[in-house]
Image (cartoon, rainbow over all chains, first blue to last red; front, side):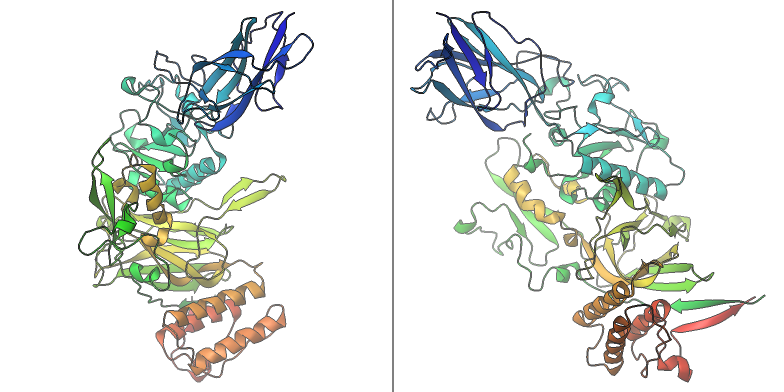
Length: 288
Length: 351
């Protein structure tokens, strides 16, 4: 008698996969997508050849991340991915691999906690009869490509010599709608204030699905670029920027004030040395 | 050819301290910093405090990552500015108003004015900022990004309105036009003034809010890597009234399509605010008559069909100010106009 095993995200998203004809899902997917650090209930189960749930079935669960997704064109052994935990288990126990047993109802209940990195990930389950995996993503699906070449010169990424492992700067142009409008209209106000300037340089917004925007070789998968995780922040080059022509550099303090006039948060927008950093949300309001 | 223009001079002298704008009756978002520097045990989870004069916050912050000991860090709000704005409006040519502003910072101030903004109606489009006049060493410039118009889900458009009318209760949010001291310019230090700010508009004058600020970037003093508890407690500073000073002034508020009700409400609210802050006396016969006249106009439910003449005349600078705006927008005429005393709205002839 063969056994079938399937995994599900709650009840609605589960798909039954016959393990007698093992299928391994190899394609990365951005759906479903879970917010970084969010906790979601999952369950796994075994069914026998008659479609009956198998109580006390042993299941081996493990999580992992697909490499080179969501513009993370770098990888190493420290790449984080989602963890899971069991109800009633030791508090704070986060696992990336574990054996567990389904309950008397045939279900193994557990919680998945999304990683901090926006990326494609997977959860696999294994029994003596085979392995099956579910693909999902960690990140945000409410950030959108935001570029206006008529007023913004794109700098950063691999385009202007500041390669941070995220490829071309086109990959770091994603923002939430309200913040994108705020940046756009702050730009219009600033340009109106400086008739001789018709473009300036923008950089680092967020990656295509947001999440950890790590920069620099020594900070892979971690901060400090904490404010760029949520698609609410952008950097605009000021004096001292080595990537933006002087004629297109802004007076940082003035541009920040224009951002604030367009809804950016005063406490979280600041002069970051060689650029203005505007943020329309507090970093404390999103995981980073 | 003789062109008749109407010239209106309005004077707005409304000094205010930032500390007072948020003082009376307002619950403090964070406690005061203890005078002896000792934190009571019931405030052990409190990391952000205000100084007694509300000009700075004290943050108990870790010295660095992993540092469990918290040390006080002082963040200046640069809000001790005592601004005055003087506004004048001239209608030239007919249907176009030139608004001019001069700003001052009282000797009593402790911080300088480095930027200021005027609130316009959110959808105001008929505005043109003129270059700021003045010497190069006083380099200021102004910028108007236009109304923030975004596509709406229903296929229409939505105007983003971010500017609160702090001085006009219940008034809808608007948008800003702003002036900034440039890096090579001079801030308006305590005791100094600066003029030469002007905008043109086809919109008639009404009360609106103007906000002054130092130009310092608050966020520069905040370590964004501080723990979320600290950043959360600092979030009250996103209410811009902590770092800027709002006063009432006159600005382009009413397009031709503005309803009489909207206009009258603006004047009523503005007058109430001026009474609240003590610039107008509610017992003044002139003010009583103005309020009564506004009621009469509102009851007409349309544009005034005839010029309303007031029996009284303004006797204080603030009353003159109000009268001038009323004359320009609602066509009210005061007794001073008829009796030949110094008019607040006069007609001039130009060749």
